[in-house]
Image (tube, rainbow, N blue to C red):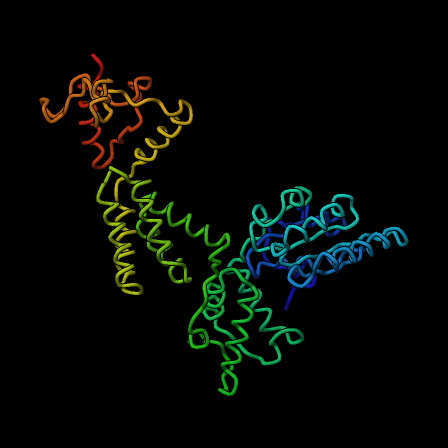
Length: 421
């Protein structure tokens, strides 16, 4: 059921509209070196094969998994001879190009640059991370999106009705809700949708059933693996959504993205560590209890494990999402780090130094230090504690949210009392 012409291709309207540059390049046989980037089943290989069917150049398929540098050398030599003797271009299709190592990518680079070959590559990984910058700069990057539910329904109906390449010879009917369920559960992956349909049809064999129902779909697909690569972009996208949902004070989305990670088999300790960091990075003193909740959830996870600790993780993520937010603590240490980088290791004022020997006391260590406990209100009027060169610098500025509102008011009074006289 793989589409064999542009007219059969479903989805990717942003790339293949009638007036799009890519469509014009394919129809005019002027496709340049291109990287097709998108999730599984979005049509990368299909689009490459359509280019192969329409181009007048010699189309060579190459597997990044099975091929090596020696194979690339042979392909380039043949392409150079082809250009010299028949004036025919060579288009090389590389599937799963992210599996190329640096030497393989470097082997292609000069020949893409001088036009000996036109490279059409497919990848599920972000090219910015998976492909050398030099090779990437010589290619156009086209982002393919997951197919919509409606697009997948069209493909499923085609498969059911096509007697030559599909399942039409079985003369099966299908409820609209059944096809839509398959499409929705396929996460934009045409290959997965067609495989699910085939599995449902196989499950009906011998049952004298002539209609695909939602019940048949549920029975044939008891468990659906999630699209999730624990080391790839999908992992970082979901983590980013999890953090941003907590930061945006949305407990519903926070718990949803957390469960996406856990259900896909991500390390639950990674999830708890992210919440511990978040509690200080994004909440801080606006709600000091947030750090206690996050560390308690981590301790519960280590004590009882999954699935029971899911309760504690869900409690923590929802609490962190609902808590008032402040990044003041993070801003404070970043400012301190910048000052240290700019000014170096400034000397500790002698009054703050530890006079552990008589010699140090004679040298003035600790001289003039006044204990706050002996002062009215527990504050030494006019006292400073930063290096002399930084007196008056403000690093920590509490927000007006949550507990920091009270801290802000108290700190303003403390700083006014300690201002140099």
